[in-house]
Length: 503
Image (tube, rainbow, N blue to C red):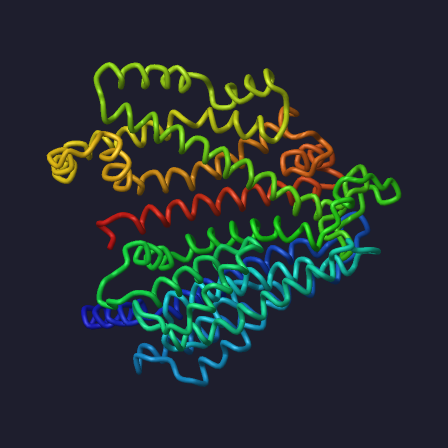
């Protein structure tokens, strides 16, 4: 009996793994429950001895939505085990879950969108995340309605964001209907172009979906797999990796759209009548010791953190690729000279080199980006060098040499394209390290100017009020942790997606 029950349990687990809905619903229910419980801890205001109404209502909403997702999960699991499919009435619960985006519950709303459709392709999944990013930006921007005034471009920005969200919503059923396997209907080409244009808001999921639609609409043989599309498919199997990508894209899009919907003056201008206000609808993260809105400062601070993280990593990658490829390909004296110089740089402690460069050239965003980029060059050069040493004696390289190909052609056309997997993984982790580094420099007073909204600056200002006004440090600190975790999750996802053993 025990053996029989063990095999039945294994068989049921295999059935559930064939369907995407159980894992997404479980993640939605669990994440919503955790957020609801975390919000419940913020209900009591120790200063006034009262219970805050808004956190209480939002906490209850998240907990109720988690219960609905859990109910849908139990029903879906039971039907999959019995009938190997989910009935239409259970799928209609997805409508109830999808509308939870109205209170910012992306976990349940994603589960609802996935539950609604029986046959889901990669494009539909990308479209779901694309829509959620745009709607969430709209909701965050709507918080400005509670302020005494809004910026001059607020209503224009909200109108544009609403139009983009409408386009994304309309594209979901079209993508589900007209994309089959590796082929897409030719009608999808105009939609793909429109989606690429909407990526100007910073929504990279829109760019990805547009490229996927055009690529599949132009393909002539639907039996030929597209390698980079296969990587994206494997990446989307990991809930944590896609969650990391969602957080990164959301913060990137929010930092771009904030130019239209947020007033930069609230983030930098002093207002001594509003000093150290507790979190409220007007000031969701409270105000600092100069009366500036911490929420607005955190929103604009994402722009600097992402810019420095991305561009410093780009500098490291470009220079690291050149040095690593030359050292690995030519070996001998060339390799020794390059690597010994890089060893000197690696011997300098992590932040000491950037601090020295900033001390010499001054504190500015460009100088910090350059300093962090230079400091990370040795690690990228070593990564590329190892890949080049491994590949330079491969058969395809020998064939290129036999055909008379020049060294630069062999390096950049044959070796480097086959060395990108470890570099991509290293780059995603490196951006997260760059975000941490710029925040650390600002916290030490060696980074961005103190009045400019940057997460390290905001955290430094809040560290003096940890006992009386802890929110000043909690929210920027939480933003740094979340963004770095997002890049780490995405890097782990790319590692698994690019590993040929896991295909």
